[in-house]
Length: 98
Image (cartoon, rainbow, N blue to C red; front, side, top):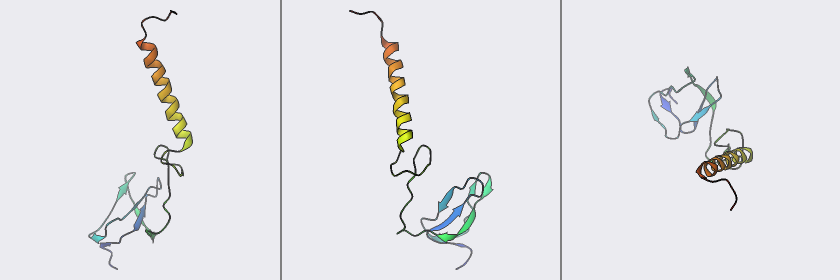
């Protein structure tokens, strides 16, 4: 193993925010990923394809089995309902009963 070869599944982790990236196609050359204006350091572990993938919410990034976790889903649904009410109210010309 040479230092100028990228290994499939090699993991890099940002020391500041904890973001991780992994090599999905191996190749030659040096890889020096940058995150938070800092060079990301190479982890000792190598991800395996067969490991169970972690699922996280696309909105808040917390662990979740769904693409969007339940609390975020409720918040988005509530915001959409509020927006709909505002649009419906603004579109009315008369507010009296018929």
